Image (cartoon, rainbow, N blue to C red; front, side, top):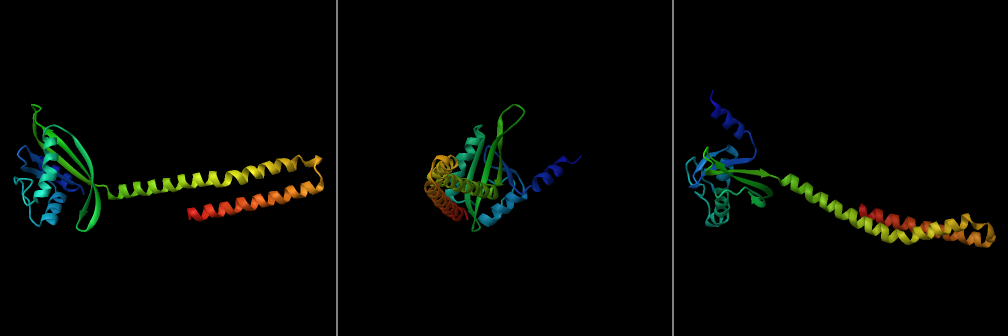
Length: 195
């Protein structure tokens, strides 16, 4: 059966960039997403057999070649990176893994770049929500502690007020009402903070 056609179809169906190069940095295989990215970034087509750094700026070579070399030395690399691609800020996760032959010798490197922009933005949103909740929790404890303590103290006194005069009971009810007003005001302020 023509397995190579199925492998190519499988790899080309991925939205992620997939490519492999040999120990001389010659491109061995790549999917259409990789070729499309290279064409859009550098305005030139890259072909199988070309040096992976063909049409790439010197700054890009300085950045990527040492990383690729580490993978060719046997290191598995997973790295997140923010990039500006065609004017859009994106987050990418790069995975570089050495490729071994049957004698367990490194013959090249496989690279996969995943777009993780959505996942990272969700992660940042969750972190922001956690910070707000933490801030809300701190404010809630700080701002409601005294009025709630006063409220419960006065409530207990009022419940056990058979020994208190009617005037004292009336004063306690008034103070309870004041504490309820303070609690209500604080809750409104906290609600405004959240919204």
